[in-house]
Image (cartoon, rainbow, N blue to C red; front, side):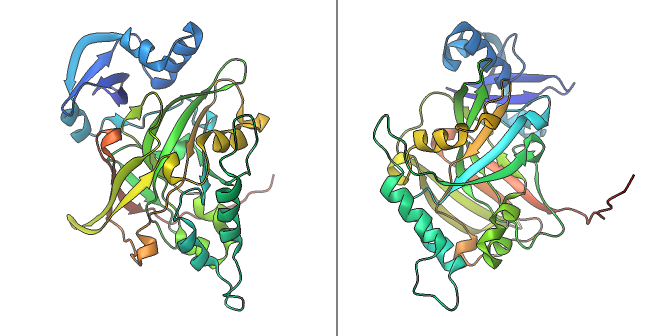
Length: 329
């Protein structure tokens, strides 16, 4: 089962089940996937069961909602500060070579880079046996809920950015229950969107390169994630595809288990605050930047996987420069 969040023309928010490629079945008595999760947690049931018990009779056109710009990310929070967006890198088989090339020292080209060391550590210790703790992955913070662009909306890139390129990934979505336990409610296809030129200058700039917008959805996949996921990432310019490449995800194609990535995120009390929402990106091995593509204003990103239903599309838009003024009082 897959869910979407959308707005009516009046602005009211709703949740719907994706009945088919053209039809959304609206749920009754629930205005967000977060509220549905809270109901499921309180009732001790699953998201699928909670959604099934709230299926109404109202059906609407999926295309109409999408074309009118009323699709929302698959998870939101009324207070964006309580929606944390994070991720892990060097988690996918094949993801290390491009990164290592970006960060190789000119004087020690033959040496193993820090990125390659991190990747190797994941290959050797990222899939621990049940009950054991595996090696921790590379981790980064992207921002709060205010940086999540809706499906079909512009993907804003700051005026000072040196690059703005897609990263086709899967994001897991969590709600923290009243006892402080993370509860995974589903998965979404996502564009983690980063500034790779800034990162390439020095790998210690990774934190800066990740403080950018992102996008997810439009559909939230309920239940477990298959161990093998296939998708395609495309870049459009003036309506034509200028770059296209398949990508793989799921544990069969990763150097870490999802459980290990989750443990090393939620082991921090900071991320177990009741009522908070988390979207955690799991990484990728496929980038147009790694193939020498330079994006430009107006380019459109498209990321799709049949597992997640409708493709995710966003248009790159450079923001106007903003003067930074620090006041003293």
